[in-house]
Image (cartoon, rainbow, N blue to C red; front, side):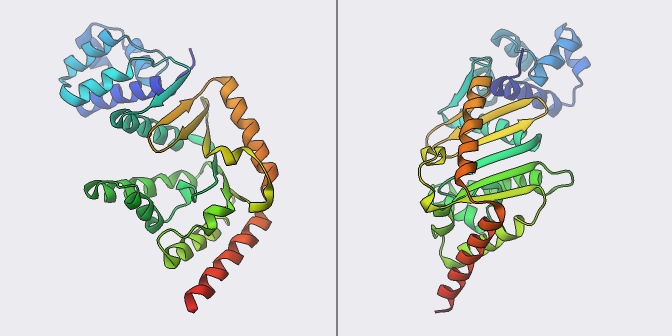
Length: 281
């Protein structure tokens, strides 16, 4: 059975609950009277346990309250073709799964028509977005830190290949004022020098293409490819081959509409100089 994003998230939650209590798979399996191999496959997402089996594990581990309920909820629809997250707890679980996929990625393609892609955002740019999105003050610093930490996937040794398809609108939309945008644009130019990053801009005059329907991500890992979509109130994972093919074709059309990297860097540099001149006036 192919691992699903939700099944993988369930397995990760079970593994974390076990590790938090310093138990090995064999120790927990002996306590439950189960085969360690079965428990291991549940934790990797290769197999999906039933709700009553998850309840047995959590009870044995002493997990209760909100954490218990959130993990139990992951068992429902874990093998479905897609995973829609509409509640705050589900969105937190899905974000954890997204970060897990991202950190294990070999290639990431991000289409972002209106905002600078998340992996290329500066801390001040992130803070402006999250403040305007009314992230609670007590969570702001932690969320900014998490997003900055996610950059590691494209800056570490043996980084993932990263294709960023950015709308010209994202470069010209002034979030946080000129200083924030000047820093952000300069950061894009610096990141574009990395050999694993392919940064492309689709200009205003590029006509219709699928990016105008909204942003999306394609994340490739050694275990397959997933698509991630999100809006203000919900997020969606897709992993079926037919869905992945649809978004691959969409990405190809956006690539056709975009400028090549050299032309893109030239435009970004022009926008940076325009911002700097405005700042001097």
